[in-house]
Length: 274
Image: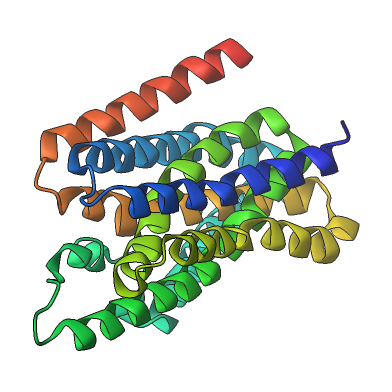
């Protein structure tokens, strides 16, 4: 298949994993803490390894010889890297902390609601707002992730695959954060699941935006800058979202084991692909 089709399919797969989290959120009364801790660590390990071992070296290689002197490639790589970090940091500043999917505090509040208690109605209204606002926040975060998947797959689908895996894994807890509060607040599982799926579709929409805006200008120089930006996005997500969220469950060694396993999987897969 043409790389464009593959790129869209990969971004769609990454986005639909939010729906997988939605399924977990509506069919389990309590989140599987061990699974979430390990999965968050695993996703962080994949993102950190692929960023430093593949994306940044690839960025420098693509930008070599671009401009006077070899230093120019390093400067452009660093500008792209910190630009990617800055983009996600800006989104976090614009999204209220209480509804930010990078804040794990809301994930276990769904268990607090008690049937028949005097505060039930108020609590349900609060849970409903939490789910809806979390979905909106996830949409904002998924746009750059969809663009990252698309851009990397356009040039090299093999390089995009581990990125898709990492994004898909970290989208699962986000799906739980959307579906579970909606389900407990309304009693309607399908509403929670549907909202989780819809919020994940921002990924292929971000891919479409990348295709419409960036496709005519794609070159080795732009790819180099974008690879560095994708690395910055993934490193920021790993240290700002994934690892702190994993630590919330107070199983530190399990989360670090997940990081190590994620890195090992990426090292093995990259060795087999080369």
